[in-house]
Amino acid sequence: MLGFISARKVGLDDPLRLRRAESTRRLLSLELNHGRDVERIHGNGVNCLDIEAVEGRYMLSGGADGVIVIYDLENYSGKLQYTCKAVGTVGRCEMFAHKFSVETVQWYPFDTGMFISSSFDKTMKVWDSETLKPAERFMFDGNVYCHHMSPIARKHSLVAVGTKNPKLQLCDLKSGSRIHVLQGHRAEILSVRWSPRNEHILATASADSTVRLWDVRRASGSLFTLDQHNGDKSKAAAEAVNTAHNGRVNGLCFSGDGLYLITMGTDDRMRLWNSGTGENTLVNYGKVSNESRKGLKFTVSSGCSLDCVFVPCGSSVAVYALHSGELVTTLRGHYNNVDCCDFHPDYQELYTGGKDCNVLAWVPALRPPDVEEERKDGVGPVSVNPAFEDAWSSEED
Image (tube, rainbow, N blue to C red):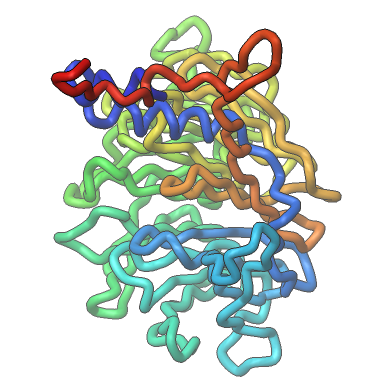
């Protein structure tokens, strides 16, 4: 630690190197925090979580019981043991609540005053987080599996919505209407993600085994379809179209810098792609268990030297190194299957939700205190670390 500080002081190190090093240490030391409870509100499984990026203080959760909860993650007590309280709840008995399972929740990227939810009741709702009443509602023909709004968009306010219909729906929050559809998939769309690098680039994953990337400014079809064989005709001879997996593709996530796209399939494989060229990087993660019949909510770390992917696997969360494919660790704490997880980049914390109706907090282990060397005989004062010695001397010395 002192080496980082000294190198930064004399200008030998990049200003962010110390921060990245400490963030990486915290990431690799994640453990279940037994002193931090998240108030249990859901009466059924927790399907989705989202931590807002403006203050990093509030977290949304959506459940299979149709309930939406807003949690305040701030610790006001100053104690090591505390409970993250629910500050807002949309219960099933309320007039505007979703009638069936809530599949996705997302904060408005630039303001905590609004959030969006979608459900199997064939609706997507835009909520006022103060009144907890919907300001807008969009109706669809089939179950809504997912939605996503660009985290960086300044020139548009589009929400991409994946439903049982193979056509991707684009909804405009400014006009309150569905303005466009993107056609190309042949089965339901299970996951959608906007690029964090380009506000017009969108990725979609479908039950037809394909992943497509789109530029919403183009009126024609998708930019390209990901090919797990990278164009090797001998391996793809029996396939009429390019496929990303040998099964349903139900998970998508961009890396923090937007240069890579991670996909999950029911063939128990996770793949890493170059988002610019669509090339399969062929990183081998081994068998990654995926038993979800719906969209799989996994997440990627950011702001660290080592990028990691957090993937729900049964009742645990597997942590993989993004670029090497190495299994770093496995987080165990839930009593039933984990359905979702969300990474808090400000504090390098992880929150997970599962079918046991619990939301668990995983926090970095405390750094052990620096132990100063004592005299060998164990008697006398502890020797002072030279880095903290007073280097000042008077003329008399």
